Every structure is written in C-alpha cells, then in structure tokens.
Length: 337
Image (cartoon, rainbow, N blue to C red; front, top):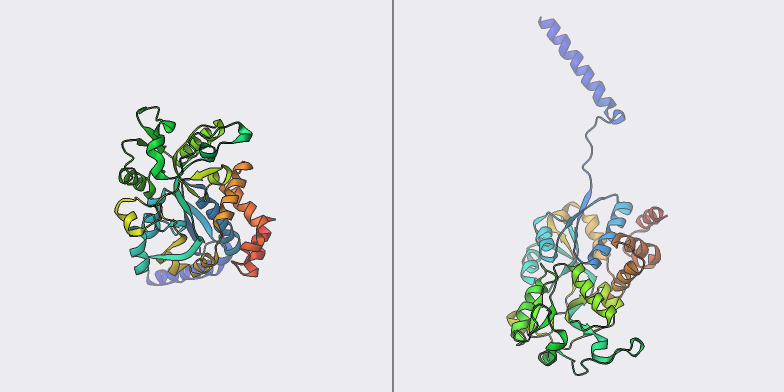
C-alpha cells in the first residue's frame, strides 16, 4: 500500500509538471490581469467626444480595454472620487468646488490639467429677439433686453403656457449644480415674481426646446453653456450680468455664472496603477472653439460622439500626435486605417 501511494504521488507530480510545462502552449496558464480604463460617460456631448478620442488612443495605442459608466455631473464626480470611475474627461471645477477640492488636496483625486482651458455658462436668448433678423423677416422683439436686470420688463415675451401670469426660464439639466444656481439666482435677482423655472428633464429636451423655438423665430430664454452644439450652430445672445464675484456668487448667485476651467480628473488609486495613462492625459488638451466645432460637425453629419472622435483623429493629427510618442502615434494611425 505504501509503495502504491508513493508511486501514485510520483505519477501525479509528473503529470502536474508536464501540464505546467505545456500550460503556455495549451492556454492553461492564468491570464494576466486585463488593463482597463473606466470612463465617465456624461449627459452632455462634449465630454463624450473627448471620451471617444482618449479611449481610441488608449485602446489602440496603449492596449487598454475601455468601459463606461453613465451619469450626470455630480454622480460622475462622486464616481471618480470613489473609484467606480477611473477618468472623467470634463470636470467643471468651479461648479462643485466643495466636492472636488478636498480629494484633490489629499491625492484621492488627480487633476491632470485642462481638457480645454475655459468655458462659459449663463442665460441666453436668440439674437433676433434683440436685433431682429432681416433675412428671416424677423423684427426686433425686445431691443432693450440687454442684461439679466432687464428681464422683469419683458416677462410677457417669454410667457409660460402653464403659468401665463409669468414668463418661463428654461432651467439647467437636472443633476447639474447649475440647476441649483439658477433657482437661487431667480430669487436673488428678484425675478420670482416675474418668471418660473421650467425643468426640461434632460439635456436633449433642453436643446430641443431651444432649437425648436429658434427654427420658428420664437422667443426663448434659458440656461446654456459653451462649448455646446447649440451655441456653436445657433446665433444666441448672452445676457449681460454683474461681473462674477466668487464671494457673492457663493452667497446668492447674484453675479454672472463663473467661467470654469474644465479639467481631466483621474482617480488617485487608478493613477498609481496606471502611470502611463496619467502621463498621456496630462498631455491631452484642446480648446473651447475646437470642441464646439467638433460638436457642430457631429450634428451636421449625423454622427455620434465616437464618430466625431474619429473625425478629430483623422483630421487633426497635428494636435493629438503631440500628446503621445511616435510609437503610439503609429499604432493609432494603423487602427484608423
């Protein structure tokens, strides 16, 4: 019995040894951990175009697999801070500084620099409301409407069909900090007796309301931002406001909206695991004008965000090749071909 057990043990050991030797050729070896980057996919177009650009380069130039987690502005911020998301390509820093600043300070969150250096946000109306449009046969409707302070005089022009005793201001997208800001601003500017905020429900509904009114030559008043498809394609007038003052803004939002830097944010733990990704994203930068042009091209050519990203990679090689090594650039070009 002892001999048989020893012999059996030897046979098992020999078999295991052979299997281990053959494993690399038979596929039995344990797979290496997959390199994955999880991007925060947003409910606005520009972030998704930048996702598409960065993801294509990381996938084809560096060998990473790509995943996405969908969310609005604040949930994406919480996701990248908590580690459910690795990268958010557009962190609108001044919208929610109390959320971003502490984790950046302690290294939980890495600010990789500007995706584009500046943005704009505020209340807009079609330019023809103020100046008219001779080509479309539109007479000026409110030539004196220049600033936010003029709005009480013109509430009837923007009459709310559901509350006809007040005008309608289209609100920011639900889940954005700007929606809280507009609610506070309505009160601090003394506009609550003249206007109601209308929640569009989504970014696409907000865009549709603006475009629908614009195509019909009708008045429209609401929150919007740059870069965006609509601000790139439609001639909108930005209502003037008191100069931005951080202290006053934080108290009651009674100044102009902040022009916020839009930075690339990376989860700190992921950054330690993937320094090459951090190095690439620190080099990644565009402009507001280019981002807006890409969004306009996307809509005009009926593309999705990834289609716009491919257009950028093919047509703006002189920009993105500065972000990567020549070897990575060659791999990306080969994938595009």
